[in-house]
Length: 231
DNA sequence: GCGACAG
DNA sequence: ATCTTGTCGC
Image 1 (cartoon, rainbow, N blue to C red):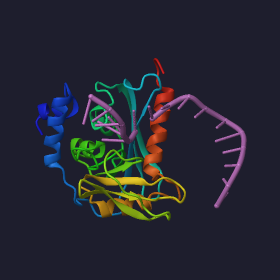
Image 2 (tube, helix red, strand yellow):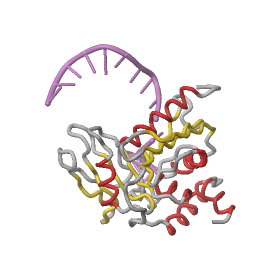
Image 3 (cartoon, rainbow, N blue to C red):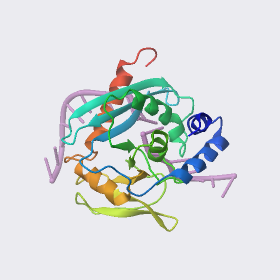
Image 4 (cartoon, chains in turn purple, red, brown):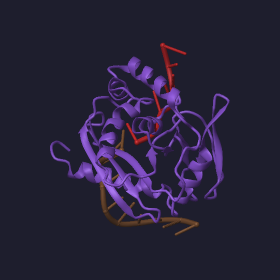
């Protein structure tokens, strides 16, 4: 893509431009499987924010795990976000820092599990889609709550229910652990929903969140704790 | 106009 | 997102 297109996708000057960038990206999104053959190295992406400064400094992390779950590589990036947190526009706040993490990550994963929505988003372009398009890498949206749509799975691990919104299925509510709130999965980029569900369920290991997301969360928190300057 | 609202 | 360790329960 042209350099200025990347600027547009990462640093819109206002909401109108951000919406236009999301429309461009949505037109390029691939929501069916376009993956290398397994086994895959799974990655996790997440960001941590500071209390009392919720709309400024972001601490992002991407980790790579081997098929057995061991951490192969970690990269973090702490910076002042140039876009505030606005529901529906999270990508513009977190993707620039996550892209910096990707550039320094010593071992790249085949698929990234992203802490946020994929296409289960008002304009079909959640954080996972945004990151996948900017990096050109397969991604899965793994959210802990819904932004749009509805869906309630049964109580047993593995139980699922479609997430429906405006008459269409946009994702899947998946119970990964008994007694815990479900996860909401949706296609990010180049990964279909069925494959996404199999991958997430296989990486759960008895916990609510899949291992790559947990590892990324820990790395992002560690970056925040260890960050210099104002907490 | 009112309420909802990933992280 | 963040404030927070131990504690109650399966």
